[in-house]
Length: 159
Image (cartoon, rainbow, N blue to C red; front, side, top):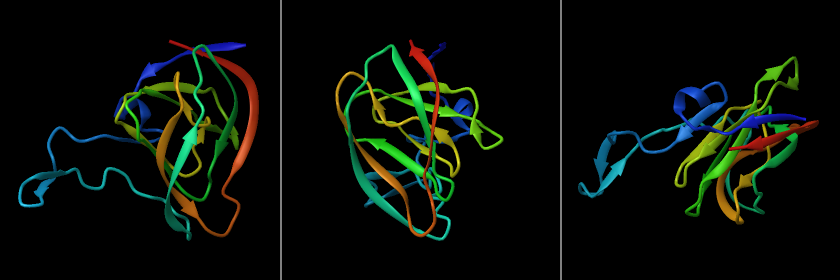
């Protein structure tokens, strides 16, 4: 079984897979009579002819080391995950290699930070660490097959 180490989440390291959802160093503009910073259009919702929907996902937690053996992707639309709690969480992604997932990478996503996975990006299931967590999820609803799941050789993920 291969072992991979979790790496810190940076916009540059995550760019091949999607966008990091966190405030910019400075807001794009101030709104609400100057009381609210607007960090505008942090990501684009890809919806492939469907509609963008908002959901709340409630996920069981995992502990490290974690064994990942299932990846999925959504070829018709992006999928954004924003944690609603105070904890770090894990995002597992993999490049596409001829329609199959390549070698997975694991990112530690800080509390209060989300990710937007581009359409077609292979990724692991929601992975809060140590305790269950809720996530606001923005993704696509509509016609067409928008879920592919693949079992992979297990990968052990550690700090």
